[in-house]
Picture 1 (cartoon, each protein chain N blue to C red):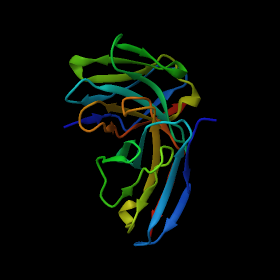
Picture 2 (cartoon, rainbow over the protein chains, first blue to last red; picture 1 turned 90 degrees about the vertical axis):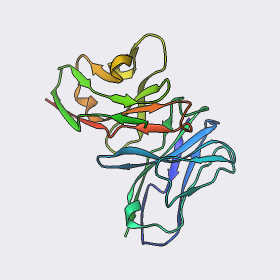
Picture 3 (tube, rainbow over the protein chains, first blue to last red; picture 1 turned 90 degrees about the horizontal axis):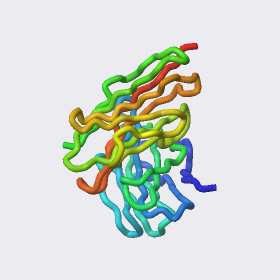
Length: 113
Length: 114
C-alpha cells in the first residue's frame, strides 16, 4: 500500500531533551516536507526536500533540523525542544515538486513540558 | 508576500444544503491551487487542484472549485452536503517561485446539522 508513515504518533517529552520524528514513504517520491499544525494557524511548512541531500527552509524552520540521506526517509530533529514546539506535525511527500499532489502521513502529536 | 486567507473559521450547514467555502490567495506568479480535507484525527487528503485550463475544477466526493483570477479566489463548493463531509478544509497555494514552498490557509471547520 502506498503510504507515508510517521513515528511516533504521540510523544510527550521535556524541555531540552533531543528527539527525532521519523518519516518514511514507499512511493519513490522526490519531494518531502514537514509541517506543523496549530489551532487557528493551519499548516505551516517547516522544511522541505527536493531530493536526496537537497533541503530548504520553509516558513517556520527555527528550532528544527532535517536530513535527507535516503530518498524514502526524511526525519525531523528537535535538538533542544521547547514548549512552543508543542504541536501536531505532519510529513508529506510528492512525486517531484510542491506543485504536485502531496500525500500526508497520519501526524505526530508532540507535547513538550 | 504569499498568503492564503480562509475568512470563515467555521461554517454550519444542514445536511442536503449547498456549501461554499471561501479562499483568497496572494501569489506573485501563476499559482497552483489546492483544496485538502482533514477528517478528525486523520492526515490531509487532496480534494482537487487547479493550475490551468478550465477554471471550474471537479474533485472527489462531489466537490468542485472555481478559480477566479480577477478576484484571486478559489472557492470550494458542493451542491448537497452529507453528514460525512464534516471535517476541516484547507486551501493551499504552491508554485515555482519562492523556493517551492506550500502555503496553507488557516482552515475552515465544517459542521453538518442533521
